[in-house]
Every structure is written in C-alpha cells, then in structure tokens.
Image (cartoon, rainbow, N blue to C red; front, side, top):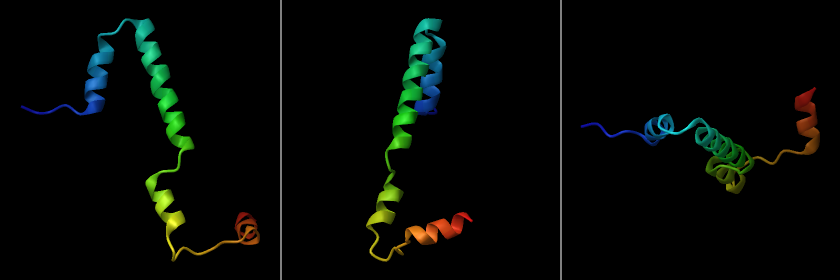
Length: 66
C-alpha cells in the first residue's frame, strides 16, 4: 500500500468540496505562499550567519547592476 503525500491528500480532499469552500482553501493556500515568500528561509539565515561570508558594499552591488 502506497502512502499519499500531503499534496495528493489536499487534492483529493479539495475535489470533495463545494466550489465556495474550494475557493476559500485556494485563498488560504495563496496566503500561505505569500507569507512564506516574506520570511527568509534557513539557507538565507545560514548564509547571513556564516562567518566566512564575504561582505559586499553598496557600491559593489551598484557596479553589478550596471
């Protein structure tokens, strides 16, 4: 017997919902995605905390954008 992933379970459950509830679930999922984009992930935090990370000045960043 195979175990369903959380995404597969969400799809199966969403198929059983009336349209108005499915739209609410979709709105909530979009909210969660937007919230996640605003928070730094662990890789970003690790890079910031890395003692060997190179410091980049604002002038260097500007030069990269030219």
